[in-house]
Image 1: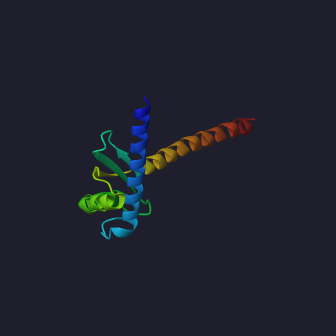
Image 2: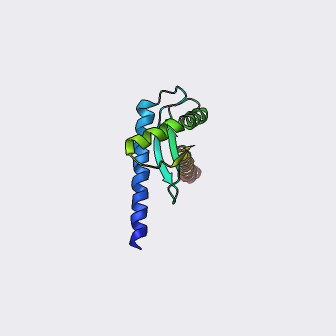
Image 3: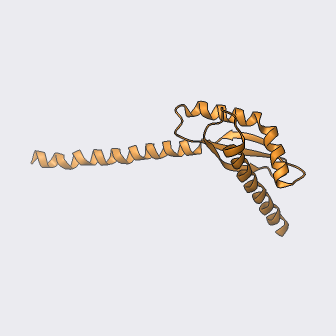
Length: 139
């Protein structure tokens, strides 16, 4: 049992290191104009450690966020070889997982859900206010 916890802990550390290193590269070293202002929100390493999904969240200040996400992911996919080589040099490891860049839309989905829930709560308050004032007018 302890060996499984150790393996999971190792994978978590590798994923966190990949997240930090790729984030630093996006901020400073990659000069592709297609890359919008973004950050690495999560790195999900497969159990074998051979591949990893890199979730990239684009800033909401972009006008067309869906297009910015597509351009950013395409630019990162084209720079994948450089990113893997740089990570190998920085971390000093023999094997760097195959990277798959994915747009992280969870923040937008969460904001949309909160907006819809806010409307629902606001609708109950608005419906309750006229009902309370209606009996006072009839009396």
